[in-house]
Image (cartoon, rainbow, N blue to C red; front, side, top):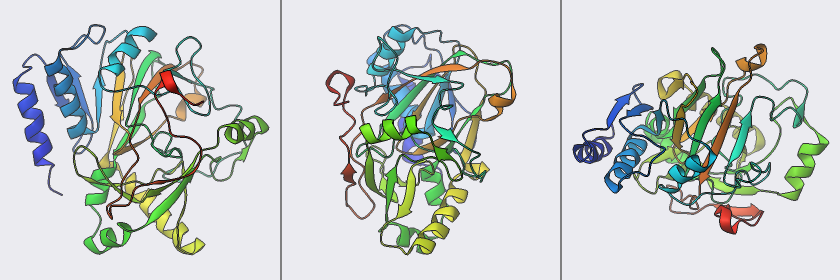
Length: 323
């Protein structure tokens, strides 16, 4: 699989203007640690350009020892785009509508029963049920267990590139329906169903999108939200989706990040999926992170067709949110 050489050249050119910034790759296809910046302070335009170039090249970038408060987190994120409301269905941090709390037990009141454990269980891109899912997410670690609680990301552009040409051609014209629903095997609670009904989001997205900045084709198959393939018979779609989900989370496309207090992960939500840790529920330690998301555009498929909204409003900037 060839490396994305234009993205690498773009990154090298940006770093030439900011020699104090280092970008240290963390795996073959995804993830880089960025050093040399104090994110509590406003970044210069060339520093923003270097971080953005690293993000486009490596899909998720990590920072260490960045002990930001809520206001500083929001200010850092705004340098890369407009911020959405914390979460269009599950709310936001009181007093900070741009932030969403990622607490250890935040999902305890959503589902009952044991979800089926498959290789792709829990993997998702953020809020792909929306007509315009977030362009990127920025997650800040505050209370971190001494061990356990790692997050993983996968590069969905690399996953697409690894498919055979005939399968790529078939997928390029397909579309899938994305919506909020409990994972297979679990039952939604009344509270969860009420929240989803009050803020219903259902969208039809291409199975293969074209990244609006890099031009890469992306296997847009968020396991947590994608429920069926349009126009295929149910069993055809189910078998194909399970193959694609298993393929998308193959270990060679992924990176695993060990959190520390003050760590930040900034990922391109248009080209990645990620999975939150489940091992923390076997530990007594607390875990608290906070996430902001950047307003995204409506995805466009490899066949040139844009996504279609079935239910719900677009995800707007927090200052003009419809929710």
